[in-house]
Length: 571
Image 1 (cartoon, rainbow, N blue to C red):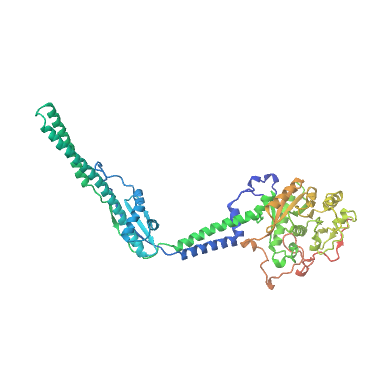
Image 2: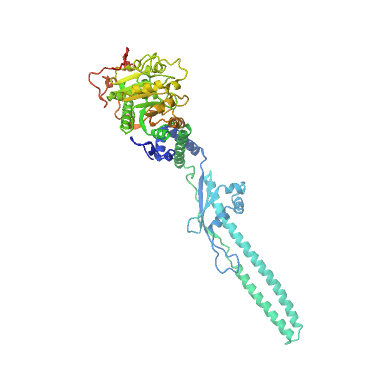
């Protein structure tokens, strides 16, 4: 599968590859849906075991018959070729089954008996292996013997009947010739000896006598025809153990079938749910590279640790935001300008605000001058994350009530300034304000910083982010690994592109890593008091804490902004 690399152009993305399903995709699906696969496999295996152990044991006994050819016509000069498949069909015929009923004195009809018998023909032999199965081992033995004897009896009787028909026909024809010969003798006695008619009658008599001699020879041959169809070379034995059910085989087949069904169910579930569960799915949906994959926060940290780039710098989540920062910096080093970045999502509650805030903090900790702007005038949350008041901000700037300089707040995080949303309760049409002239002035003013990170509202449902998209240098689409769907994210990316927005990448939020990837380089699994380490302040951009910087404890994690914020004024 073609992959994006940082710095690749949008034209390198192959749309034809978006629906390609690879072995990697299937294996990733199995890992994510491992409990479903395990459950289906266990269920099917248990059903197979239950079926196997509840079946009535069946015993099988086999008799082997060597088949011989029988001459059925006095004119045959050689033994006819045997068709073992035909002989096998004869064994399982109703005629043979009727003979078996007589031999064993069974009250079952022919069809019931035939349900218990099977015939196999070993390769390159003239042997029939007749197997009879029954719940009673003695009955299985008797059944195999009876079918072997019944087959031989049927074939012998068939040959005897054929020979008898030939013999009776020859004897009748000889009797007719005897009558003709006697009549011819009488005719000759009435004719003048040595006359022409006498000589002709004498010749006819010789012909009749020659024909009678030939028929006598044929009769002698027919009487000597073989009617022996073969013999039993291996008698049926009393089975000591049931042939079925085979518990080990049944359980193994159940395990295999359950595993296959489990994988099919897992793939089908993800297909029908349409949830973006991995970075590949997000890449295919937005047609752009994934710049960051943010692991899922623990439930205990989702409310107090949302700014993990600052408060939990050694966590895997903070490392993910640093990866996002690194990839974004690599993109910004391209010839195109990438200073203003809109962070949005397709739907609500996918983590766009948290991503924008942590991205801004990560850039600031790397020494970049950053402005974090809350352009979500529908449901703003930036001010809550930073413990700020929201009575004045972007909304008041756009309506002309406040200047831009008086709306920016200096944070206690070096290089980071925040422009909150302000009071939005009286706004009638936020989308119109976001694409107005004052908004262009706000962006131009903010571009004095190295980066402007904008928290925008979700794309689907409102037009606000669509209004902002053509005004910024790049758009980052955030998708939640539990809520985001391929359809919604692809639709959002398409709408952003239609209005002139440049989707430079995506962020997969709430991803649940598996195995060592979830633990390497992380403090998340250290829960003891001995492993608690205070965060001394902002880092130098490489994960190291800068000495002498302000300290933040766990209880202060929700308020990394001074309680008495300082307005930023340009000189």
